Length: 339
Image (cartoon, rainbow, N blue to C red; front, side, top):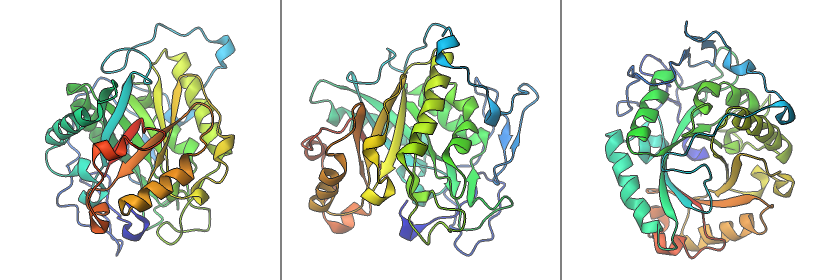
């Protein structure tokens, strides 16, 4: 979702949006109730959380014990085996969510989209890596209106997240929760997704383009973050993963220009996480490759490269890059995402 096309869509079929920027959600998936193994609570579109009767723990205040005092249980595995993402796997996925304009993932039948990802992933296995399908669901959605708490963001209802996870599991795929925080801070929004992050097949993606200051409005300025804020999130998530004996989690951060994260070299490597810097940016192949070279060289130790393509917007500037062209990038992307 580009800054120029900020979409304000309710995160659930019961949400009514009165903003003049609101997009039609006639093609959006309904927030149907599904049976999933984590018995989630519900979260309203303004971010206030209602905990289910089976869970008395507020997900924003889950305590984290230092790793030195934690005895981790036996680790569970990734959807297609093992506990480590790289170098065995290459992640290939679609992004999307509540509205068609969010990306390919939210258009039409969800299982059909996952089948497409599976087929597309096989075009990225030429170097011996096994493709691992990814559903990157925009879970915390930036808004053009402030909402009751003035945070300019809405959280997707648990029933809808559960629906995506159910389909992901059927195909042994990863679900990544994409966070567009508006005026909220990343760590608060990540902690609000604790119940989902406890699952071994759920990872995290942060979108700092939509992280604005306390007096700024999304859609009017580009957001940004710092290595310090990312390190704060990664420290919390690393401890969370270790305590629960989870396999490695993908920790993706999207970046389309140097100003979005100005101090990338200060990003720290964390136990139990694979940090992926995903290079965004719409344009012709030559422009995308130029942005790629600018943002990925050099990458900090322990940081992996990701690359994003846009089915519609990129084609306005020429042909969509092919998998063979993407694999010629240096370093070779370990996460390829389509919107």
